[in-house]
Length: 85
Image (cartoon, rainbow, N blue to C red; front, side):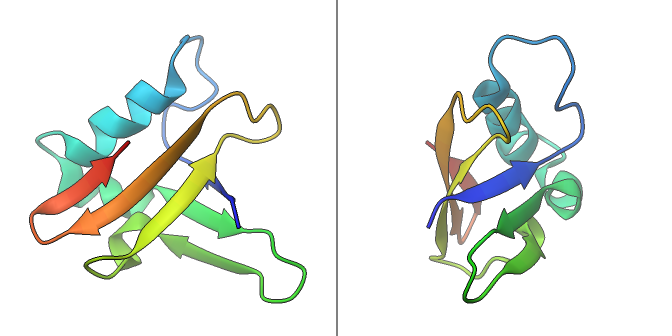
């Protein structure tokens, strides 16, 4: 299921929020910023909220911005950090 992602700076007048998410999770301060990226699974059967820092190595999540859903991204936790595609 596609999850909803919120992170610092979202909502600012910027054209490409997916790029901003990628910069947060792959930049120099990625370890610190991962504690500020909140991922929400809105499932009616098993809703959950967690931080990007809580993801296990190999875990992948498809995320989007809410409510517009104008972009989608896949966040993957790797042994060296995060990968956003």
